[in-house]
Image (cartoon, rainbow, N blue to C red):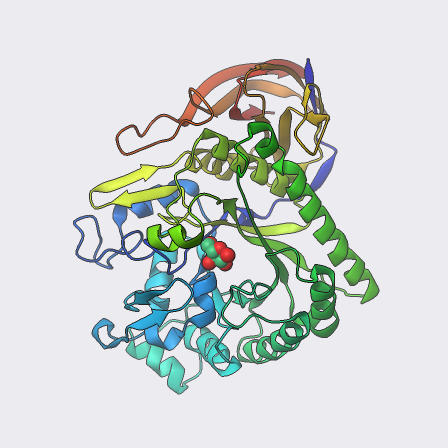
Amino acid sequence: MNRIKLDLDRCLAPIERNIFGGFTEHLGRCIYGGIYSPGSHLADSDGLRTDVLAALDKLRIPIIRYPGGNFASGYRWQDGVGPSEERPVREDLAWHTLDSNHFGTNEFIKFCRKLNAEPYLVVNCGDGDMREARDWVEYCNGTQETALVKLRHKHGFSAPHAVKYWGLGNEVDGPWQIGYKTPEEYARTYHEFAKVMRWVDPSIKLIASVTSGWIDRVVERTQLLVEQAANFIDYASIHWYVGNYDGNFANYMACSEIIEERIGAFEGLIRALTFQQKLTHRIHIAVDEWNVWYRARGDDARANGLEETYNLEDALVVAIQLNAFIRHARSVKMANLAQLVNAIAPIMTDNNGLLLQTIFYPFEIYSRTCGDTALDVYWEGNTFSSGEHSALRSLDVSATLNQQQKYVSVYVVNRSQTEAMETTISLDGGQFNGKVQAYVVNGTDIKAENTFAQPDQVRTVEQPLRADGHTFTHTFEPHSVTALVCAL
Ligand code: AHR
C-alpha cells in the first residue's frame, strides 16, 4: 500500500505561475508554418493561426520566451520590424536556414497579447553588441520622444510594449553557440549589457544564462556572474532536455533523480553565493528551456526542424519535471516548455489543422489546476530500481494548495509499467469536503502516440470522485499521470 500525506500547515512556498511558461524560436516550423501563416485559411488578420492560438489558450501560458534559443545569438532585431516587404532575408547560422524576418518583435508581442502572456525577449549576446540590446529595450519600452520610440510609433505601436522580462544571451556556455563565452567573458559581458539595458528601463527583470551543458565550469560561471553582476540578476537560467536514450523505461522514469540533482545543486549554489555576497535580493532560478528531446537531434534535426513525435512515456516524464518545479517552488520561479509548436512541441500543425501530442495533456492539467502554494508532501510505498538507482518510489508526487478557492491538487505519476498503485491519501490541517475531480492521462501502452490519423491514443479522462474527512483511497493506473483536485 502506498501513502501520500498532505498537511495544510506544511507549505513550501508560493507558486509563481511563470513555471508554466513557454518558448518559441525561429526554428523549423515553430514560427513560420506553426504560429504564423499569413495566407492560410486558418490565419487571422495578423497572420496568426487561430487554431494554434486556441490550443495554446488551453495551456494558460503566462510567459513566452523568444526569439531563441540558438537563433537569438545571431539575430538582429532591427531586421524584423517595419514594413514586411522591406525586411531583409538573412542566413541563420544557428539552424542553417534562411529567415525572411516577416515575423519579428511586433508580431511576437501581438501573439503574446492574444494569449494574455508576458513577452520574454532574449537579446543577442553572441554576435550582437550592447548597443543593439539597449536599443531593443528602448524601441519596445521607451516613452520619450527618441528616434527609436518614433520608429515604433511609425510601425503602428504608439503605446510602449512594456516588455518586462529580458534574457541576456542563450546557452553561452555551449561551443555550439554563435559567440560562445568563457565564464570570465560572460560575467563581464553580462554586467555591461545589463547596466545599459537597465539605464534605459530600470523596471525590467533580467535573466542570466548560466548553464545548459552542465559541464563547462558551472560553479565558477555562477560565482563570477554573482560576484560581478549580482545586482543585475533577477533570474539565473538553466536548461536541460531528457530522453529515453537506451530504450529502458525504468531508466527513463529515473530521470527524476538527474532533475532533482541539478535543481538541488543549483539552488544550493545560488544560496551559498547569496550568503557570501550578503545579497539583499533573491536570485530566482529560471529553467527557461526544458522538455523531452532526444530523437530529432543532430543532422536529422536540422532536416526535420526538431519535429519530435512524443509518446505516453514522454508525457509521464513531462509530468515528472513539473512535479520537480512544484517541489522546488521556493527557488524555481520560471520554467519554459521548449518549445510550443512543431519543434519539440506539444502542438503539431499541418495545412488543415493541428494535433495535440501526448505531452500537451499533463502540461494542460497542471497549468489549469495548480494552486498558489506548494505543499511539502510526504509519500512512501512501492519502489523500483533502474541501472543507477535503487529504491526509487514508484509514485512521483507533488501537491499544491489553492488558498482562496479552497482546494488541494495532488499530482501523481505512476512509474510502474504494470502495477496499479492503491494509495491512501491523508490530510492534516483541514478536511476533504466531498468533491474530488480526477484527471488521468493514460493510453494503452507506454509507446502510444497521437497521430493525425489517430489523435486520441493518449488524452485526459476526467472522473468525479468523493472524499470526506481526513483520508481516502485511490488506485493509480499503471503508466499514468493523475491530478486529484480535492475540495476542502
Ligand atoms: O530548443 C532547441 C534548442 O535547444 C535551442 O535553440 C537551444 O537553446 C537549445 O540547445
